Amino acid sequence: MKTAKVMISLLLALTLFFVFSNTSAENLKQPAAPVLDRILKKGELVVGTAGSMPPLNMTTKQGEIIGLEAELAGAIAAGMGVKLRMEAMPFSKLLGALEAGKIDMILSGMTMTPGRNLKVAFVGPYYISGKAFLTKNKKIASASHTSDINSPDNTLVALEGSTSQHFVEGVLPKSKLVTAQNYDEAVNMVLEDKVTAMVADYPICVVSVFRYPDKGLASIITPFTYEPIGIALPPNDPLLVNWMENFLHTLEDSGELKKLMDHWLKPGPWLKELK
View (cartoon, rainbow, N blue to C red):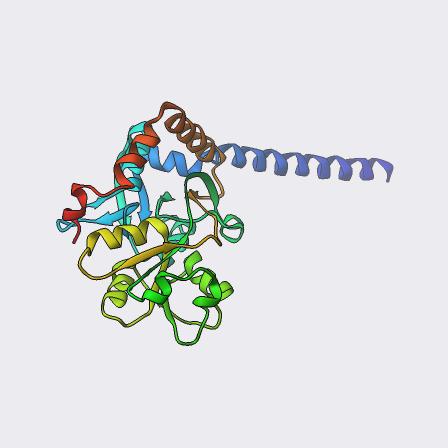
């Protein structure tokens, strides 16, 4: 009887040994950097962007995506030794596409919020922005406090799924809110007097003023927000995150990032290329 018990215990121990051995072997087969390995294997980096957020990302009349983030994406791809493919889609679809593995990262004026960071990793910020208003309304343009804007008489448009939408909902709840799929749609609402103002990051509003100098547009920046813009990455690849952190630090310390900022964050010939 005692011998039988010993044999059973020995069999159980052997079974557990093989189970754990096989599990360990399977784990060893899993790539330590699944997304980075996928990028290198395909020889292509797929970057998601809205393609309609000047001067960070924008689409030319020929359909090419240009801007600060497009150049940054190009530098990242070159650093990895792969080709770049910019995948344009509505801003509200970007995080879902990243989580589904349809894109490798997001470069699209995305604020590094705690809520987003619970789902995806972020590297940055590579740019600091704040909320602003684009308007033809003189009262809004001269507003000095949210109480001057927070009124049912004002209709504000914001990009769907953006921090601008959350800003209006949280800070200006009395105003009427409508959402747009992209900034071209939102700016047109302002130009056609369908809304009182557009709420967006300051550079987008300023570029809109430059693009339509004869339309009576004005932009004012609010002192109420801090918008750290970062690169959104999948949460399951620490090596990719580490690579991006080191790459971004190198761009910053070498002064290359500042050169990109100086080029894109002021009016230039690229304004005439936009559709």
